[in-house]
Image (cartoon, rainbow, N blue to C red; front, top):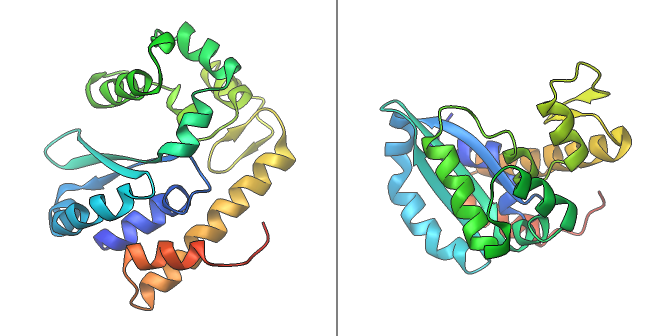
Length: 191
């Protein structure tokens, strides 16, 4: 997959404003081939409060955290989510920027994967907690393992897939990543 295809395949729902964040890795060669594009996109996407955060994990892999600041702030303002994050050692009383900085630090530097990242990715708290408990009784597995409301989760997963598929088609047709995202935003469509 090319740099553009990887970005769209893995983060279109976040760039299109229907998912708070996306997390994926990319090999260094692919990353190096698109770094100039990423620099151009950063300023363009930041106007709509969408951000790319590449975190180097090894010589061969780059971990990307792509987020919609408006949606992520909503996740981080929910009282249940804040209580959960506080129990994980986040200094929630210091606000969104400190919470986000702590997550990025954990993603970049901790050897043990911070499973609370699911909350930032838009997964329901019940599903994040169910996964952490290593419960084998999930109701469904797709973009994430569902322990709570299966119907709602499947609808959300279908929306993410539809978004990625539509944007990927436009990339295949020759549109750039920013134009694909802009075009998706102009669509009149149903979930």
